[in-house]
Length: 366
Image (tube, rainbow, N blue to C red; front, side, top):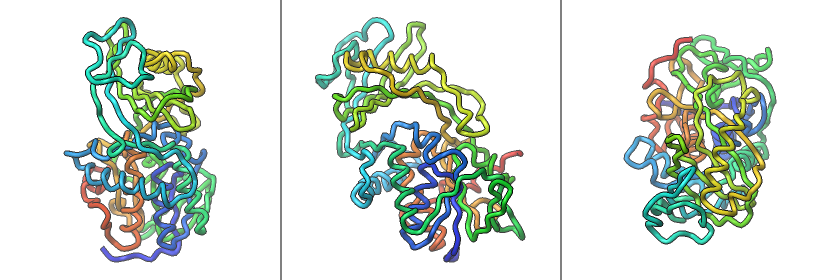
């Protein structure tokens, strides 16, 4: 793989993956144009928990990517002057029921603020291994840093990649051909649909709901719940307090089809209320907290559960970065750095991208 010195790079998508690619390309002196249809961090990148972990992907192909990214998160928090809520956390496993109590009591000493009908079952992480960012602010900080180095953000709808002689020559945006030397596709679950390239593997959208609560006195303790509804259904809510007094709660999945854009994502008030009630079983403070946001988003996933990071099969000068599932916020920094290395130097050195080669999966039928 030979090195490439692109004069023009277009990144399609202003979520955290696209912003990370733009950031690390800008550090190599490349001015990037980012194309976004709806808004910066308008989908999963703005509606995720922002939880990151050092070793939760160990014993899988994602392990090295996650470890590299966790270290990069700490470096970025020092390099980028914007405060986007990065901090280390303690992380616990807890169990609760919609009605009644879990027998046996706490397995380990419980933090004082956990005073509801909840059992603290164990510790999952410490400040050495788990942390958080505010996802929308982190995405915006990465993009702003890239823009200050000569990049540009253009609002518009990507209608396809223009290919001539087997190479990408530009991106069609609102009917206009924007010529470029390199195209990076990072539009989450909409990547395949918007790019229109038959050689891309299938990218699915997995819908989930979340709420945010106003609870300013909750310490830096992330909770992962074993929660049973009255009818017996098992859920796994996640509760992630933020430094600004907001508490994020997610954990309701839905198999609704992917809409045309992030603007068309529908929110279920019923699902969001279930999440708020689950959080209320943890503590009296969360039970009394007001719901400030009810949200839904689609996370991009692939058929084998691993992201697509690398060249688009059969199309020169086109790259893809998507399919990170629930670990997009964690793995964005190493994805951005590795893909920037691959584009500019011809190979990635910060992490081995071979497990994420898009060519490993068959092309989607379109």
